Image 1 (cartoon, rainbow, N blue to C red):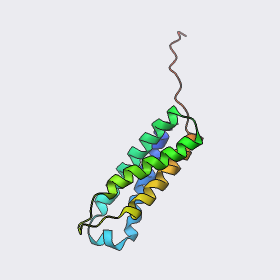
Image 2 (cartoon, rainbow, N blue to C red; image 1 turned 90 degrees about the vertical axis):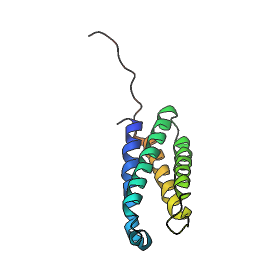
Image 3 (tube, helix red, strand yellow; image 1 turned 180 degrees about the vertical axis):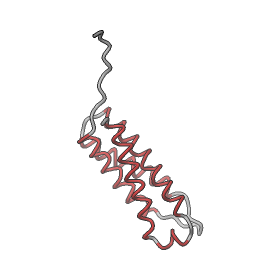
Image 4 (cartoon, rainbow, N blue to C red; image 1 turned 90 degrees about the horizontal axis):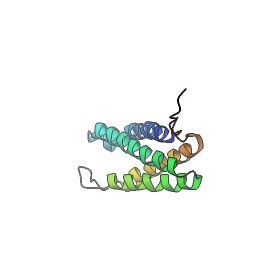
Length: 125
């Protein structure tokens, strides 16, 4: 599987899991925010995975996977955390910690198991 496809798939799955774990937060369930949180987390994971997968295709280094994943995960999570809840509060820690973990995991997995795309062959058989 290519690094880009692996990153997008893993990011989406981990983002979905992150969103589903919000069922354990009584505040989010009580405020009826679950569908928005699940969709938002899944999309955030997809974008995180796409960026990290692309980055992993360009640079073959665990350090790039680790630091790049952390940076992308934290940046996208910070942008989401800037959106206030219905009471005007922000949940930086609750949003940014799982986002950073998703970014680091996707970065390391893409570097370890993802394959670089092969160059197209234009030979005549």
